[in-house]
Image (tube, rainbow, N blue to C red; front, side, top):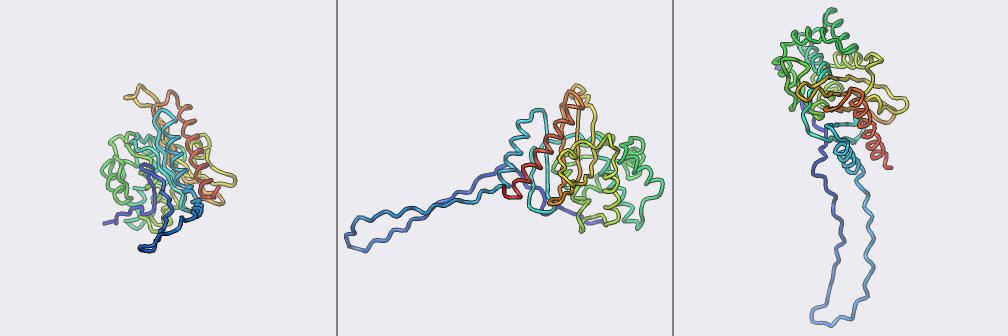
Length: 293
Protein backbone atom coordinates (compact mmCIF):
# COMPACT_ATOMS: atom_id res chain seq x y z
CA UNK A 1 0.00 0.00 0.00
CA UNK A 2 1.49 3.40 -0.85
CA UNK A 3 1.86 5.57 2.19
CA UNK A 4 -0.25 8.67 2.57
CA UNK A 5 1.84 11.79 2.27
CA UNK A 6 0.60 14.87 4.08
CA UNK A 7 2.09 18.33 3.74
CA UNK A 8 3.32 19.22 7.21
CA UNK A 9 4.53 22.77 6.81
CA UNK A 10 2.40 24.07 4.04
CA UNK A 11 -0.54 26.37 3.87
CA UNK A 12 -1.19 28.87 6.62
CA UNK A 13 -4.83 29.96 6.88
CA UNK A 14 -5.73 33.61 6.86
CA UNK A 15 -8.89 33.32 8.88
CA UNK A 16 -8.73 34.32 12.51
CA UNK A 17 -5.57 36.37 12.38
CA UNK A 18 -5.10 38.57 15.44
CA UNK A 19 -2.35 40.93 16.45
CA UNK A 20 -0.40 40.14 19.61
CA UNK A 21 -0.95 42.44 22.53
CA UNK A 22 2.04 44.20 24.01
CA UNK A 23 2.07 45.72 27.50
CA UNK A 24 4.47 47.00 30.16
CA UNK A 25 4.25 45.51 33.63
CA UNK A 26 4.73 48.09 36.37
CA UNK A 27 6.18 46.88 39.67
CA UNK A 28 5.27 48.82 42.77
CA UNK A 29 6.98 48.26 46.12
CA UNK A 30 6.04 49.98 49.39
CA UNK A 31 7.64 49.52 52.77
CA UNK A 32 5.07 48.08 55.15
CA UNK A 33 3.77 50.66 57.61
CA UNK A 34 5.85 53.48 56.13
CA UNK A 35 4.55 56.60 54.56
CA UNK A 36 6.23 56.84 51.28
CA UNK A 37 6.96 60.18 49.68
CA UNK A 38 5.24 60.84 46.41
CA UNK A 39 7.07 58.92 43.79
CA UNK A 40 8.40 60.63 40.73
CA UNK A 41 6.90 58.68 37.88
CA UNK A 42 9.45 57.06 35.60
CA UNK A 43 8.81 57.23 31.94
CA UNK A 44 7.36 53.98 30.64
CA UNK A 45 9.77 52.21 28.35
CA UNK A 46 8.86 52.65 24.74
CA UNK A 47 8.18 49.34 23.05
CA UNK A 48 8.17 49.18 19.27
CA UNK A 49 7.34 45.59 18.41
CA UNK A 50 8.50 44.31 15.06
CA UNK A 51 5.34 43.91 12.99
CA UNK A 52 4.46 40.43 11.79
CA UNK A 53 4.92 41.32 8.16
CA UNK A 54 3.80 37.94 6.89
CA UNK A 55 0.55 38.18 8.87
CA UNK A 56 -0.02 41.65 7.44
CA UNK A 57 0.65 40.35 3.92
CA UNK A 58 -1.76 37.47 4.41
CA UNK A 59 -4.44 39.80 5.69
CA UNK A 60 -3.95 42.08 2.68
CA UNK A 61 -4.21 39.15 0.28
CA UNK A 62 -7.38 37.99 2.00
CA UNK A 63 -8.85 41.50 1.79
CA UNK A 64 -7.87 41.71 -1.89
CA UNK A 65 -9.64 38.45 -2.67
CA UNK A 66 -12.80 39.64 -0.90
CA UNK A 67 -12.65 42.96 -2.78
CA UNK A 68 -12.01 41.43 -6.17
CA UNK A 69 -15.62 40.52 -6.76
CA UNK A 70 -16.74 37.39 -8.52
CA UNK A 71 -15.39 34.26 -6.89
CA UNK A 72 -11.72 33.68 -6.28
CA UNK A 73 -9.40 31.46 -4.25
CA UNK A 74 -5.62 31.87 -3.85
CA UNK A 75 -3.00 29.71 -2.16
CA UNK A 76 0.75 30.41 -2.17
CA UNK A 77 3.82 28.87 -0.58
CA UNK A 78 7.48 29.85 -0.83
CA UNK A 79 9.58 26.69 -0.68
CA UNK A 80 12.65 28.80 0.06
CA UNK A 81 11.24 30.49 3.18
CA UNK A 82 8.31 30.82 5.54
CA UNK A 83 6.03 32.90 3.30
CA UNK A 84 2.67 31.19 2.77
CA UNK A 85 -0.94 32.27 2.49
CA UNK A 86 -4.40 31.08 1.57
CA UNK A 87 -7.40 33.24 0.80
CA UNK A 88 -10.84 31.86 0.09
CA UNK A 89 -12.11 28.36 0.87
CA UNK A 90 -14.61 27.97 -1.96
CA UNK A 91 -14.61 24.74 -3.95
CA UNK A 92 -14.16 25.31 -7.70
CA UNK A 93 -14.58 23.18 -10.80
CA UNK A 94 -11.11 22.25 -12.03
CA UNK A 95 -11.54 22.29 -15.80
CA UNK A 96 -8.12 21.37 -17.26
CA UNK A 97 -5.93 21.90 -14.20
CA UNK A 98 -7.01 18.38 -13.15
CA UNK A 99 -4.75 17.12 -15.93
CA UNK A 100 -1.76 17.58 -13.61
CA UNK A 101 -3.51 15.41 -11.01
CA UNK A 102 -4.33 12.75 -13.61
CA UNK A 103 -0.73 12.54 -14.80
CA UNK A 104 0.56 12.46 -11.21
CA UNK A 105 -1.81 9.54 -10.51
CA UNK A 106 -0.60 7.69 -13.62
CA UNK A 107 3.05 8.25 -12.65
CA UNK A 108 2.34 7.00 -9.13
CA UNK A 109 0.85 3.80 -10.54
CA UNK A 110 3.75 3.19 -12.93
CA UNK A 111 6.28 3.93 -10.19
CA UNK A 112 4.63 1.28 -7.97
CA UNK A 113 5.10 -1.16 -10.87
CA UNK A 114 8.78 -0.19 -11.09
CA UNK A 115 8.66 1.41 -14.50
CA UNK A 116 8.33 4.67 -16.41
CA UNK A 117 5.51 5.49 -18.82
CA UNK A 118 5.25 3.65 -22.11
CA UNK A 119 6.08 5.59 -25.26
CA UNK A 120 2.36 5.77 -26.08
CA UNK A 121 1.48 7.10 -22.63
CA UNK A 122 4.30 9.64 -22.86
CA UNK A 123 2.91 10.97 -26.15
CA UNK A 124 -0.55 11.31 -24.63
CA UNK A 125 0.85 12.88 -21.45
CA UNK A 126 2.70 15.48 -23.50
CA UNK A 127 -0.42 16.29 -25.50
CA UNK A 128 -2.45 16.54 -22.28
CA UNK A 129 -0.11 18.91 -20.40
CA UNK A 130 1.66 20.88 -23.14
CA UNK A 131 -1.32 21.33 -25.48
CA UNK A 132 -4.20 20.60 -23.06
CA UNK A 133 -5.55 17.94 -25.42
CA UNK A 134 -8.86 16.55 -24.15
CA UNK A 135 -8.82 13.31 -26.13
CA UNK A 136 -5.45 12.36 -24.65
CA UNK A 137 -6.75 13.28 -21.20
CA UNK A 138 -9.80 11.04 -21.49
CA UNK A 139 -7.59 8.15 -22.54
CA UNK A 140 -5.22 8.58 -19.57
CA UNK A 141 -8.12 9.14 -17.18
CA UNK A 142 -9.51 5.77 -18.22
CA UNK A 143 -6.07 4.22 -17.79
CA UNK A 144 -5.87 5.25 -14.11
CA UNK A 145 -9.35 3.87 -13.37
CA UNK A 146 -11.33 7.06 -13.89
CA UNK A 147 -12.71 8.85 -10.81
CA UNK A 148 -12.13 5.97 -8.33
CA UNK A 149 -8.51 5.65 -9.46
CA UNK A 150 -7.93 9.38 -9.06
CA UNK A 151 -9.57 9.32 -5.63
CA UNK A 152 -7.20 6.55 -4.51
CA UNK A 153 -4.13 8.43 -5.77
CA UNK A 154 -5.28 11.63 -4.09
CA UNK A 155 -5.35 9.90 -0.71
CA UNK A 156 -1.67 9.17 -1.19
CA UNK A 157 -1.04 12.77 -2.24
CA UNK A 158 -2.74 14.03 0.93
CA UNK A 159 -5.53 15.86 -0.88
CA UNK A 160 -8.54 16.45 1.33
CA UNK A 161 -10.83 18.79 -0.64
CA UNK A 162 -10.76 17.39 -4.18
CA UNK A 163 -13.69 15.35 -5.47
CA UNK A 164 -13.06 13.58 -8.80
CA UNK A 165 -15.96 13.43 -11.23
CA UNK A 166 -16.81 10.81 -13.84
CA UNK A 167 -16.30 13.63 -16.32
CA UNK A 168 -12.76 14.63 -15.38
CA UNK A 169 -13.26 18.34 -16.16
CA UNK A 170 -16.05 18.57 -13.58
CA UNK A 171 -13.81 17.50 -10.71
CA UNK A 172 -14.02 20.02 -7.86
CA UNK A 173 -11.19 21.28 -5.65
CA UNK A 174 -9.89 24.18 -3.57
CA UNK A 175 -6.85 26.40 -3.97
CA UNK A 176 -5.39 24.91 -0.77
CA UNK A 177 -5.73 21.36 -2.12
CA UNK A 178 -4.08 22.32 -5.39
CA UNK A 179 -1.17 23.66 -3.36
CA UNK A 180 -0.95 20.30 -1.59
CA UNK A 181 -0.81 18.59 -4.98
CA UNK A 182 1.92 20.91 -6.23
CA UNK A 183 3.87 20.20 -3.05
CA UNK A 184 3.94 16.48 -3.86
CA UNK A 185 5.55 17.32 -7.19
CA UNK A 186 8.56 18.99 -5.57
CA UNK A 187 8.99 17.23 -2.20
CA UNK A 188 12.07 14.95 -2.07
CA UNK A 189 10.27 12.77 0.51
CA UNK A 190 6.94 12.88 -1.32
CA UNK A 191 5.18 9.95 -2.98
CA UNK A 192 6.74 10.46 -6.42
CA UNK A 193 10.44 9.83 -6.93
CA UNK A 194 12.76 12.37 -8.51
CA UNK A 195 12.50 10.96 -12.02
CA UNK A 196 8.70 11.04 -12.08
CA UNK A 197 8.49 14.46 -10.41
CA UNK A 198 11.01 15.86 -12.85
CA UNK A 199 9.15 14.44 -15.82
CA UNK A 200 5.84 16.10 -14.88
CA UNK A 201 7.43 19.45 -14.04
CA UNK A 202 9.37 19.38 -17.31
CA UNK A 203 6.08 19.10 -19.23
CA UNK A 204 4.61 21.99 -17.22
CA UNK A 205 7.66 24.01 -18.22
CA UNK A 206 6.94 23.37 -21.91
CA UNK A 207 3.29 24.45 -22.01
CA UNK A 208 2.37 25.93 -25.37
CA UNK A 209 3.04 29.67 -25.66
CA UNK A 210 -0.61 30.65 -26.06
CA UNK A 211 -1.43 28.88 -22.78
CA UNK A 212 1.36 30.39 -20.67
CA UNK A 213 -0.85 32.96 -18.99
CA UNK A 214 -2.18 32.96 -15.44
CA UNK A 215 0.29 32.57 -12.58
CA UNK A 216 3.17 33.23 -14.98
CA UNK A 217 2.22 36.94 -14.90
CA UNK A 218 3.57 37.04 -11.33
CA UNK A 219 7.06 35.87 -12.29
CA UNK A 220 9.89 38.21 -11.37
CA UNK A 221 13.10 38.92 -13.33
CA UNK A 222 15.12 35.81 -14.12
CA UNK A 223 12.26 33.48 -13.15
CA UNK A 224 11.34 30.11 -14.60
CA UNK A 225 7.63 29.19 -14.67
CA UNK A 226 5.88 25.82 -14.70
CA UNK A 227 2.15 26.17 -15.31
CA UNK A 228 -1.10 24.42 -16.13
CA UNK A 229 -4.26 26.39 -16.78
CA UNK A 230 -7.89 25.42 -17.00
CA UNK A 231 -10.84 27.24 -18.54
CA UNK A 232 -14.40 26.36 -19.44
CA UNK A 233 -17.94 27.70 -19.29
CA UNK A 234 -20.30 26.56 -16.53
CA UNK A 235 -23.78 25.64 -17.77
CA UNK A 236 -25.11 25.88 -14.21
CA UNK A 237 -23.80 29.46 -13.94
CA UNK A 238 -25.31 31.00 -17.04
CA UNK A 239 -22.34 29.87 -19.18
CA UNK A 240 -20.03 32.17 -17.28
CA UNK A 241 -16.34 31.30 -17.33
CA UNK A 242 -14.23 29.17 -14.99
CA UNK A 243 -10.56 30.22 -15.19
CA UNK A 244 -7.87 28.50 -13.09
CA UNK A 245 -4.07 28.55 -13.02
CA UNK A 246 -1.63 26.46 -10.97
CA UNK A 247 2.12 26.02 -11.03
CA UNK A 248 5.58 26.86 -9.78
CA UNK A 249 7.72 29.97 -10.21
CA UNK A 250 11.41 29.74 -9.38
CA UNK A 251 13.35 32.99 -9.15
CA UNK A 252 16.68 34.05 -7.59
CA UNK A 253 15.34 34.59 -4.05
CA UNK A 254 12.16 32.51 -4.00
CA UNK A 255 10.64 29.22 -5.11
CA UNK A 256 6.88 29.72 -5.28
CA UNK A 257 4.06 27.23 -5.54
CA UNK A 258 0.83 29.00 -6.41
CA UNK A 259 -2.78 28.15 -7.22
CA UNK A 260 -5.39 30.70 -8.28
CA UNK A 261 -8.92 29.40 -8.93
CA UNK A 262 -11.87 31.49 -10.08
CA UNK A 263 -15.27 31.42 -11.75
CA UNK A 264 -18.37 33.52 -12.56
CA UNK A 265 -16.59 35.59 -15.26
CA UNK A 266 -18.43 37.15 -18.20
CA UNK A 267 -15.61 36.26 -20.59
CA UNK A 268 -12.49 34.12 -20.60
CA UNK A 269 -10.40 37.27 -20.96
CA UNK A 270 -12.00 38.72 -17.80
CA UNK A 271 -11.10 35.54 -15.93
CA UNK A 272 -7.51 35.56 -17.12
CA UNK A 273 -7.13 39.19 -16.08
CA UNK A 274 -8.48 38.49 -12.57
CA UNK A 275 -6.27 35.41 -12.11
CA UNK A 276 -3.15 37.24 -13.26
CA UNK A 277 -3.85 40.26 -11.07
CA UNK A 278 -4.48 38.06 -8.02
CA UNK A 279 -1.28 36.05 -8.56
CA UNK A 280 0.78 39.20 -9.09
CA UNK A 281 -0.68 40.91 -6.02
CA UNK A 282 -0.16 37.89 -3.77
CA UNK A 283 3.47 37.38 -4.72
CA UNK A 284 4.22 41.10 -4.48
CA UNK A 285 2.87 41.21 -0.90
CA UNK A 286 4.71 38.06 0.16
CA UNK A 287 7.98 39.11 -1.47
CA UNK A 288 7.86 42.41 0.40
CA UNK A 289 6.97 40.72 3.69
CA UNK A 290 9.71 38.10 3.46
CA UNK A 291 12.34 40.71 2.59
CA UNK A 292 11.37 42.81 5.62
CA UNK A 293 10.29 45.87 3.65
